[in-house]
Image (cartoon, rainbow, N blue to C red; front, top):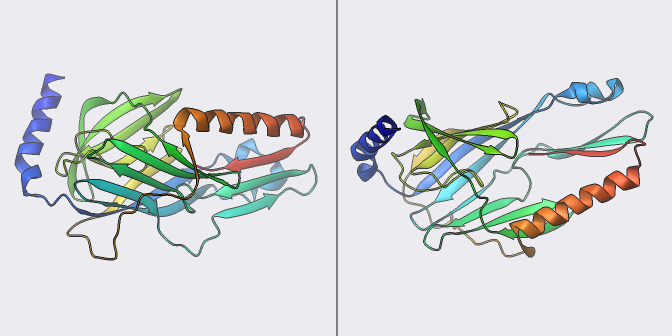
Length: 247
């Protein structure tokens, strides 16, 4: 572990003080779907992966992460012929979801659309990052690897001390540098920076706090989500039903 911190300090000392702490990062998010889990008559209609592009707009005080406009239908339904099963596909990170972070106050707001209702989830997910000794280049920046377990799901993130802000795509932050890539569940979902544009933000690139939606804590939202999923399972009674594939 000592060698890891030596590398980290070396990278930080070399780069961080010469970089602008303001700009826009464009990410590509990919969700891979195991179509073998679904009935044979549905597999041909389900794409093996879904992609979307998102942007992190930031300065030294705050940031906003949200989807870029797209012509693709990000909420497409696939219906099986017989059996009464429907599958709704949601592009990862797509739609009107936003994630706002205030670095000065140490707060965040996760704007999430769940089952047709918009929630403003306050509070960060608790992440116990473990920094490893691995490093690689992403979008022209030297990055270091950090990992943690979300329940039983392994998460790996690559962050760069060259941009010394504790930010990243959505909830993936809290490291000594901006997160430029994430691997969730051994490649089932990935997020990677395509372009890092460090510059002064324009007057049109305003970072606004999400305000429309029901304010809840993360614990309250998880309870609402779990109860709704349980309710749907009981209504379906094992006779087919509706599955939502999302990030």
